[in-house]
Length: 256
Image (cartoon, rainbow, N blue to C red; front, top):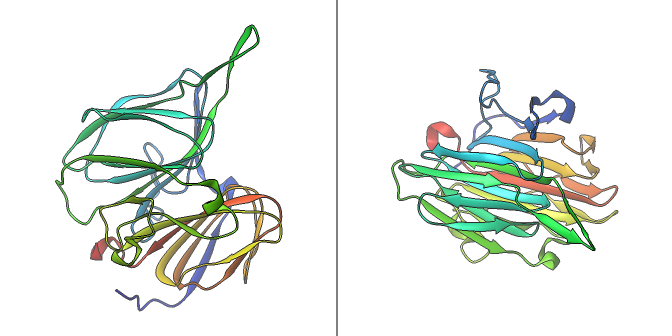
């Protein structure tokens, strides 16, 4: 599918994100989420949620429902324990891709249960992760779960497919999602390393850590994002050790 829109590069700065801060959670929302609603900021392409979350030790999200959503979780630091009503459970850690298809309805919890014993002292660390939601092709599908480790070498110096429903990525994606127009790609970059963004009607670039330079837009810092319309091909160059997440989308919500 193609877009007839004029090319747009829309930079969104980290400090302008909506925020939820409570005793156990520091969450920053790229789009409207929960009690934070802005009718002018509900999605980009097929992406509805891009939450940048830090969860304190021994806490987390209690069991709660989801429906008709493809939810991809990418951990940057620490570990996150997932359990759901279909009987799936697992620990998500850096380098491991995870997808939950909510389908016709699912209950799940996400907890920071990572405790480390060092000598005679027990201590724990916060978990930092990005959770992203895209709409599925169809509503009411069978709920599902998938996780798969991606070798760190695959995320060093190149843009790698993390999750995709696009037929052309069938042999590349670490995990599948139920939308044939969407793919998530990622890269871990050392200073001076660069990647070229794909061309698509909609792109969403997020910098969860580090600093990069985006061709034709300048410096992007930790937490910054860019929404591209009818664009692509720009180079992203690391100015320091950095990680980027890129959604490539070939449809918008009305066409999904």
